[in-house]
Image (cartoon, rainbow, N blue to C red; front, side, top):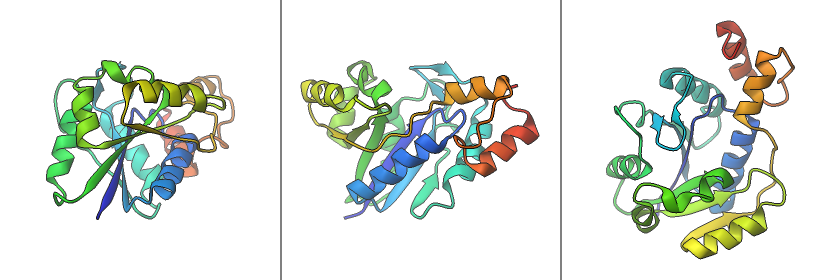
Amino acid sequence: MFKIGIFGGSFNPPHNGHINIAVRAKEELGLDKMLIMPTGTSPHKGKAAMGFYAREYMCHLAFSKLPGFEVTDIEGARAGSSYTIDSLRLLKKQYPESAQFYLLIGADMLFFFDRWHKYQTILNECHVIAAAREPGQFTDMTEYATEIGKIKVLNLEVTQVSSSEIREKIAKGEDVRELVPEKVLTLIREKQYYL
């Protein structure tokens, strides 16, 4: 049975925390492939300040050399809001029916998952996996996931960093070398992103 993870997000920019969560989840769940899915226009966050294709390219720089990782542009190819259920169904058409899908989300998304478009259908069509972004979230996440049902919470080692924090540091001229993959940081500097 082919097991495919889907890790979506704005990735504005992709950082070491994203990589850590994705790699650890792939290992822990025994996934054959992890798809990195930059969001188009997120119904939760609105349009990202950074264009889709710039964020997708940064994802290629951050993830493509990792074994079993692939970046998908499925959300950038669609106009309007990008709903997870639509992307999931499009991705499922690209793989054999026997493939199992695992949607990886963070705590920020878990705590309002019940307000996602067709969230019950998502729960029925794939495995939903939540990973903590901050220490101490595991217990709260597990309780919330139990209330919704059908969501597994992974207790992973957490790299405490956020894309918004990185953007702020870059705008202030602070060092982010420990937070962002080298190739991504080189591109950010060359293109003067987030200044």
